[in-house]
Length: 392
Image (cartoon, rainbow, N blue to C red):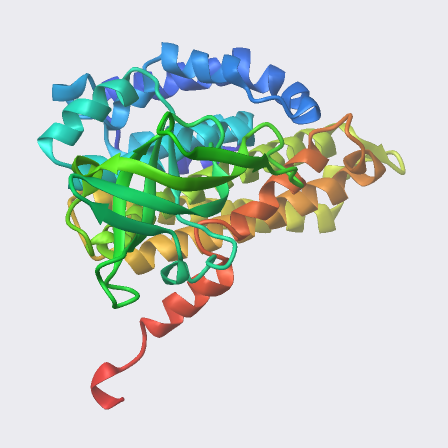
């Protein structure tokens, strides 16, 4: 790691215990997750061994309250762990991070009964998922059609979701749909905790993807599934608030995931150009390459510094950080694609073959510009924040 990026990491405010956690995650990544990443990418097999190793460290417990078997840490510590795992294996990184994306709203908005029923299992290693996207409702999540119809003490769930990370392996889903008794399209959005073993739940297919080959992305269906009303998160019609809260916290997580990929690509680039020679000189000795490296390092330092700034806002309990979260996700994912593409270019023909990690990093980087809101949507959201509402 360059001294510049070491200084950025040193600026992250962690307790001694949290630094020990990060060190243990780095050791796990070095010894187990990184060595198997290429094999899992090639086979497309779900990395259960990595998930078990992560659970053995108790990492699911880091965002669960102590009362339910957790050992909570700061958001900064969590994001650092996401980055390190993603740096070693992007597929494993997003599998683990999706637990947070799906289950953090349960912690924030759930009832004591819901906490008691679900959180101890999450802390113990159960897999979670966030189910929002539908075939005709991607960037505009308010266009979802999955329906929640009350029936006595139960709710009948009908509909389908697509592109769901952990969709065919998750134990629990934070599921969004529309309450049938509310006519307003946005006002009808409702959230619930959905258990995988509910009759009528169906995995339609597992997607074959450009990258993240070892993570599961599935299309799933809900065929008149009967769910207890006690699984509704908040009240019917409060789903949009919960959805936006979920995305605001998951977008910096996706940024950390993207920066893990970017860090890996930068590491590989630096190692390669220090060893590879052309015309009797190491590639890094050419001025044009040095300029490129300087630009990439500067952008990495800036993107990571902003991510830690957003994390400190969350840890401080600030609520108005949606735009800042979008900036983090936008910049980190664009940078991941940029650094990964340059990594392939710097490797030349070797970067285009599977013997080197460069081509995998480029494939893995692309989706970070798409999921958790496309970067076009984030640019629109950030741009709209400057509108003068009073003079409209």
